[in-house]
Length: 342
Image 1 (cartoon, rainbow, N blue to C red):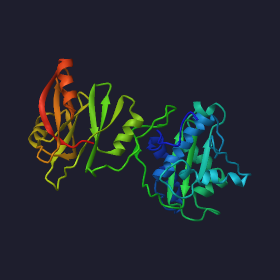
Image 2 (tube, rainbow, N blue to C red):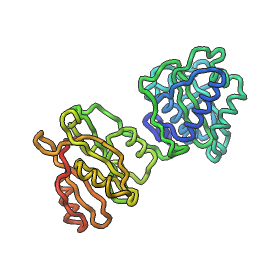
Image 3 (cartoon, rainbow, N blue to C red):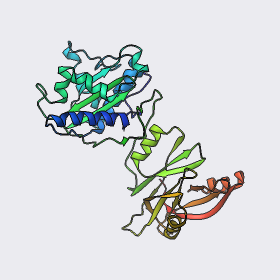
């Protein structure tokens, strides 16, 4: 397989086109007095991975077949290749999945874009597919989960009768048709060894030469999926501090002039930025940290890049010293606050 859909992919989230299709389906159901079906993270991943498999591995529209799991309506032994797909490929959805599909044939699968309106129109004009969408016989049992996948000339939608223990998918309407032939692997999240309140992930922005930090796995995954200029560098550090334990709020600002983020746990500095630097957008509190090392925390060093006015943050004294000694344009500004090693 060119695209390994057994792991997280660039289509595990909902993009703008897929959200449009979801809304069109829900609006159509509403006109018939039918309820809204909750989006499912697992079924969305199933639909998204199937569109990538269809486009890049199969190379042609073949209905409900996967490149390594054929499906034929005339062969009941293949039905489980559809029903079991959400669990077979390792998504969060534990129930059976039922798929409706539409797509262009031949080379049109890769050079024609399936729109949300066309996909729904195709299903509405097909009694069997329309029955699935509208809970007509033999699909009278309520749908409790739905997943949407669209890429190039293919649309797959998955339905399920059980709720998804994995909850809802990440939605990023800033992108459309987010699938890619280049396989995108998202990090596999494991339980934090010391149950830190915050795990902070670091990216290197290859356009600005600066770093970006986030504690949000959704934001992290969206950046990995959709921003090729951001290189993921992993879990840089943790923070065990919380507001209840007296931790200091770490504020994140976005400099609209430079396109770079700034972080501070100094409330006075944060207020000065709000009052005097209109190009900085206040993005709020991103996590909490300690202002002293009394609790055994690790110093987070802050350096100023005198060439562009951005800042560099690191827990590594070696990385700090290397930046100062080899670049010639980094000035060490001291310890920003204290965190915990990942």
